[in-house]
Length: 395
Image 1 (cartoon, helix red, strand yellow):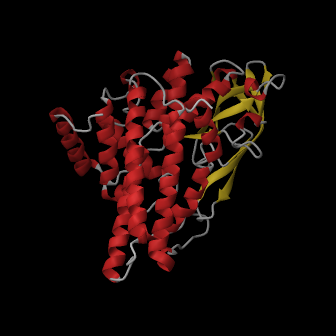
Image 2: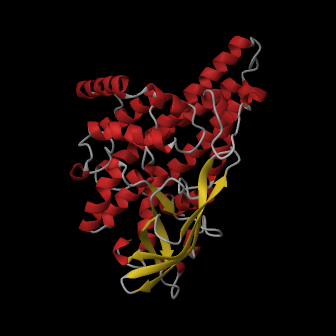
Image 3: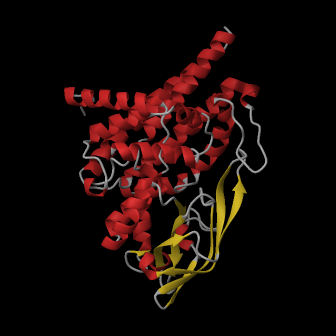
């Protein structure tokens, strides 16, 4: 694989850099750096999304007819890399990069016309209703029930660990519409308005003091059948398609590189303060190992991007990316805490909100704590290994 940029690609890189220098606000950069959660704050993400939409650069992964950019795989790679290098936030992927591909692939023309423009503009802010109490990695055991009632479904049950449900106005849900066959065969994919009567959101506060996840209850919620994506009882296929984008549809290596650069800065500062710091080279060896593994992840992402750009989807290789990215981020988090020691515990939780963080240092422990969950969300590490064994290795 040729990793050298052409003259045209270098020109594009210069255009991206100039745009970021002129249009990326300082307060968004600071808010991104200080964020210890999985996603940046909603208002920051939507401000940046609006800037990118006006430029036409918000969703290069989308087809041009829906507002995407007619970019080559290399241009997408360059754009992602430069955004992370400049300190820009990742856009909230729930609607843009997870639900939207499902609507494009399986939705009706009416659903595409209704939802895609509002996802792009930020008018609709989505959350994901997959996991339930007792149904996480074994997602096919879900019990949220949707019973037919004329041209509506009546939905009862709950979803849990629902990220940003307290901020969202819509939720895409897997629901149980048939119990007569194997579990996977009785699941449907519904789009539900969070303002519908009977929808209740209860907060869950994380170890890091964040309010990011929730439990969502559905009590006789009426949902039009027109809000179903695809065929009834075929939702499992759509869910698997979506999860490939959740696990491997973006560039993790650039985000991890950004965090690794912060770690290198922490180590440099520690050495400046204490000449004997890491005198035996233990951290230096760990850092070198992280650099090597990160380069391997980057090459894997480039291969998968080529497949997606040719009209495919990420496929089972996305599980390899999920495993590798999770491990690398967690090891960077752990080493960052090791470097700072007691100084890493600069957290000042406030009642009813997220911790107040004065700078990047004070977000290290929240990052460490929140990223413990990365071993589970989007499919547990054990599930990913099973997928790799079966779909990639043929075992």
